[in-house]
Image (cartoon, rainbow, N blue to C red; front, side, top):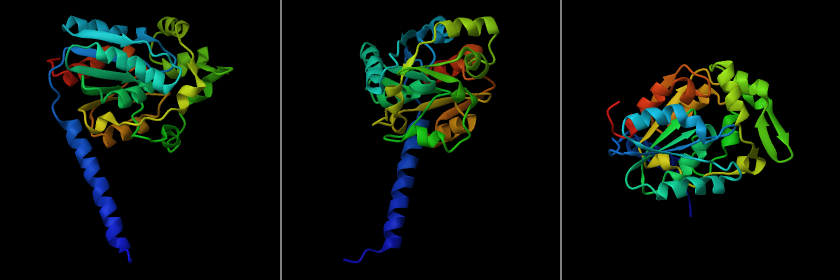
Length: 258
């Protein structure tokens, strides 16, 4: 049988374009009104990193839960978020910072999730090698500051203060450094099997001064998913240094007045 290679290639391109348009259409759709917010932290942190945002969301009358990400393996991290999502009593906005964008992307297909918010976060496609994607952009400075004790990794204090929390007062950054939770090497090997942003309204906050994830990589991922995107002049910890802007974006994703 003879295959028309031009026609075959055109069909592939048309299919890819159709998938992208469908993803962007889903992402651009107005989310239903939600009163529940589930927040997930990434590497070098614990659930308390959302305190500034939680206080503002609670003042707006929303129900908030910050997941304690075990930082062990991706399936275990996803399961920790799914258990919290299962307890929600209606539409829920799922919010992820940094590495936990992987969790949002995977767990976001949960039926309780009405919208996704990425805060300077990874946003892979299903099955995508995020490490390979990140290598197509200049390596951010924080990467050089990761130190390992056996299978556990963490940021050195110097890298934490300069490259992770660079726009926070030093005293506050040192408190955050003190509660830093180590991650297991196995966590970094995980790949998502879902891409929830292809079917759920999505929002993205780019940190323009980020030294932990390349800001241009953040912009690429936000554009690819067709997310409503804002840019915040912040370090990787914009959720702490600029909580008003991040809260406003979450309220928009929840269909609430900011």
